[in-house]
Length: 427
Image 1: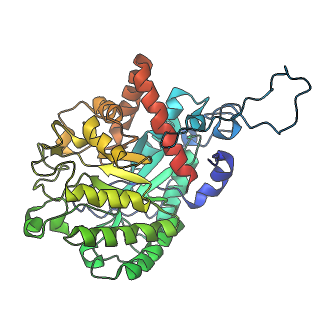
Image 2: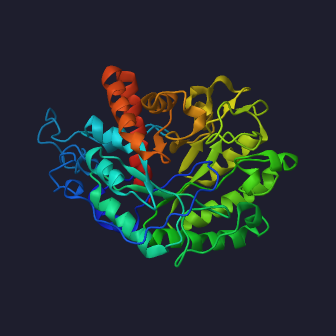
Image 3: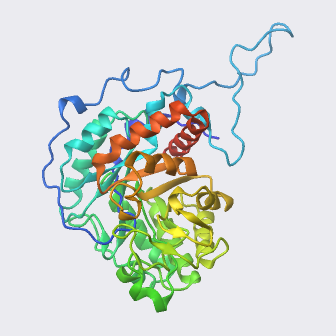
């Protein structure tokens, strides 16, 4: 496995770092960053000796293999232990060896950065909480340069030991966060599905290049929810807005994968969503409580669609917050080890991310900190707090406290952070 070299990536990251999450939310308002304050003095990037692991504990400073020279005597002990490669499918924990607990927890949280502001609260969290990802949240027609300015300010504020994930929702149609000069007007997924797969992939390359030029390196797309055509008009989170790539598994797989391939061709990682599928529910988990799917089981065609997206190479999978009565009737999917485990059962060893857990009505009955703890305990790697970024510190504190209290939970934090760092290394 190639070792992650954070110093080199940090130098290159000014071109590829911005984050925003909308999950399954309906279209939002129209913010637009036109001028940006710089980070406050307290948010300025520290010197290399601050907020980062020591050279011996950083991902680039782990043990290295022997140079192959013979030992002076048979009984001599090598001065440097050999590298132990991770078991296939398991996270490479050496990527976060020597990191503080706070640095590892920071990689597990992604916080909203409103494109209309206020910006400073998120900048301050990036500095003080070592948070490893931002989600560009809202809507803007301001164009590429103001967005790039915003991303650059976030990067400057960050004390994460590795580059930020900078994410957004750039699906097309009603769900397109970034517009204006430098960004194409993208058709909805339903309209994209009328194109041939090669044509869609080519167009997606252009859309991905536009994101990359603005500093975005992660698109929380494509939607791969399978929506029955007869239910589309009543399917509040997906069908109502034409966010689905047609109505058959074949169409969703061919066009969803083509979109994702084009984004990755442009250097922008993708997250297929919302596992195991929101196509059969009527309520939107962002605005409704008790959203439940009583039909989808573990072997459902909607799950097979995600399997195809996983095999195609998506680096992230986003969990639904709905309840799936035929898989685990006792908890929303994002809090269910059974449902999250189903993602791993399909051979996925990348990053599993939540839908928004900060403002979604579906999870409001769970205390803020426990939302993060329950998601990670279920096997999720990144907790998204996009709609109400102010709750992110409470999530960070709860994760740190849970890890200090329970070695088994601490091991889950280690694994999650390692998967995030590995995903960033692949950008």
